[in-house]
Length: 177
Image 1: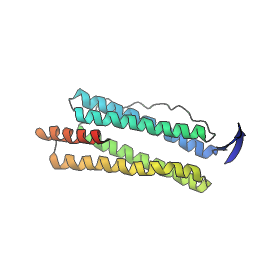
Image 2: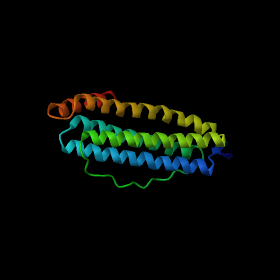
Image 3: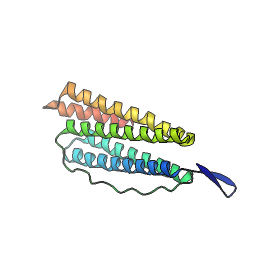
């Protein structure tokens, strides 16, 4: 890391390696946002309004995560890049598979955040390390939420009234956020 004085304020410059890692994370967060948006649409089309609301909120949350990193990079003297968005699926097998895919996506995101944290520690960039601690805690919450939903699906089931009850449970989670 190095610094530059701009308008009498010292701006810490991110190393190229950390800037790249953070821009890669922006890409992941943007893709997650669109992935959840696609799932929300799938749910809404099938009358699963509680699940649709939950995933619309998840999509917005991921976009917020992306923007938070975007601003951090620029504020730390780096250059954030607008991400290319990967194509998202339009069809899903069932509600169980959506939450399994979402949990996998969150677990992959956790691994990615942890890699960026590791890069920061090796580079002794404690400011970025500190910034990322919020993401570490957030990922723990996200994984826990999706595991809880999958546990409820397993207990209640999705046959007959089960899908209705699951959708209502998920709606309650959406209202809490």
